[in-house]
Length: 214
Image (cartoon, rainbow, N blue to C red; front, side, top):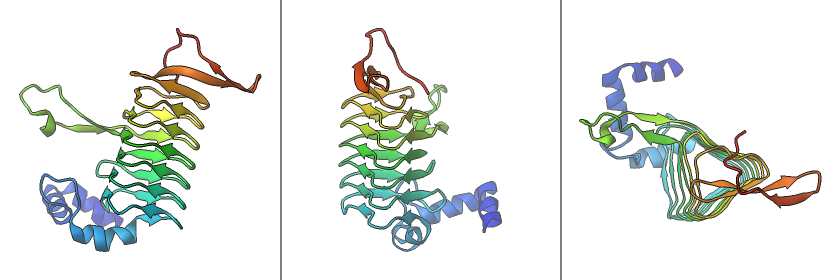
């Protein structure tokens, strides 16, 4: 099977035919037969995991997608693994109207509030004689570690890692890594608080602190 998949990827004609069979031209959504009959046998869904009725699950069989036990994807959300895997851990929640575009990895016990965008995809734009939509796409994996909370209307850009038990304030745009046990907010997001194990307190950061990296 692996050899067949590799052959299809290497041959432009086979690749074009395979993509045509999987999804309509110039669309990201898989064909109905892929959604109904193929994906359920390929992608893993844990016990008690729930995908609400009014979601758009644009997942393809040639990239991984998994939803851990007890996790929920709320209504009007979109999940797309066309350019990279989307892996969601256990007991996590993807809030109403959120968008996850792979490659994205979400850990266990994570809260993504309403209208959060995690996109591991970027469009190239440098060639001025080619429309941006026709230029090469690049990807960089987003990781949201266990117990993190991403506030409503936040955007996490490609390649960013959100540390364990970190908090992203609502409406933030996060362009750099966030360390564990840190609160960030703003556009671009900056450190607001850190947990100090010596005092067992969440302490405000100095105003001159910038982004944090792992």
